Amino acid sequence: MAAALLAAAAVTGAALGLAFSRGGGDTASAGPPGPLWRGAFKTVSWGTTGTATIDRTSSGHLVLRLSRDFKTQRAPELFIHIGSIRMPLKRAWGAQVYTLSDDADPREGVQVFCEKCNKAWGVAKLEPVPHRID
Image (cartoon, rainbow, N blue to C red):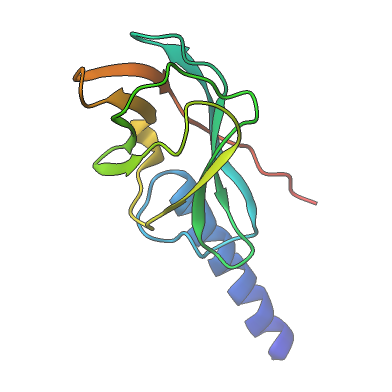
């Protein structure tokens, strides 16, 4: 009986993780930690390079990670946008981590946006990261 309950819980957890990876709501805490979405930055207005990854942490929270090789033009009013989520960019280069709310929609991609210029400087279209099944 306990084995059957454990198996049912594992199937439910996997289903919830799959729903999130397809953009299905606030199931961020479901599933194992690791990368969920990833994409490379492409220049829109100013040279922007590097990679954006959305990871699930071991505590179930979502974080946005910018790679070590992330780089864009410096400016006083740079922000990271993921759909309706807006966060000040910490700096114009290097590895960075931002905590996301469970309603972050990775299908919107990640945008480096200059509010002073009212222009997108770079965009990373995010794709689901395939999960290994062991």
